[in-house]
Length: 171
Image (cartoon, rainbow, N blue to C red; front, side):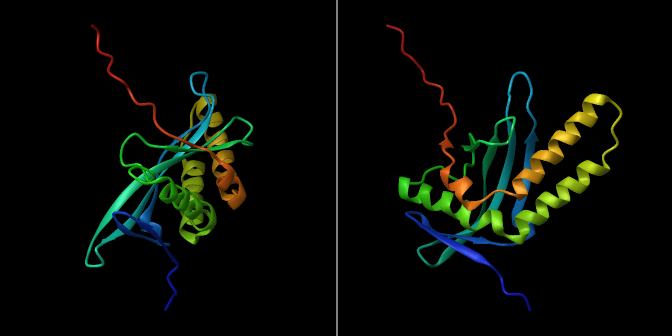
């Protein structure tokens, strides 16, 4: 029998319970730098249980992004526009979520396994053009850097909120 590693965050909506289980983590998207967007970016989905009033629970999957500059030296956490892991949380709850990512998530065996599986998948892809080869090389380099992230790097990373469109009234 394996001991299951889990973390809990207390929020106004209930207890968020995060389990170190591979099926609870997904890499939804990966972007490498381009002229229009000069950053590496990976979007993770994390499934967790929300225990409300200590009686009712449901499973949720929310997302966040880890972004890095072209030389992989600066890290930013980014909220997604929908289903954000940081959404509808107070500043203390956002800080606890960021701490969870730095002290627990990047150290879980599931995180490492999901990234290593993606690296294997990219290496097996059939590529035909120089651009495809370069994309795969950049993707593998970025994923390798994600495996080396430290708690301190994530704790120091700012959290960017999505740009909200504002409706201006014309008088």
